[in-house]
Length: 40
Image (cartoon, rainbow, N blue to C red):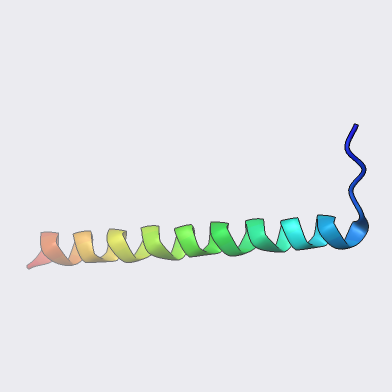
């Protein structure tokens, strides 16, 4: 069992949220551009 400090846990959680939000924004951006191509 690896002992994780609360600070490390929150840091890892923060990194995960940052990565997920970046990927989410990227996917939404691609989706909107794809819809623009369909409409035009």
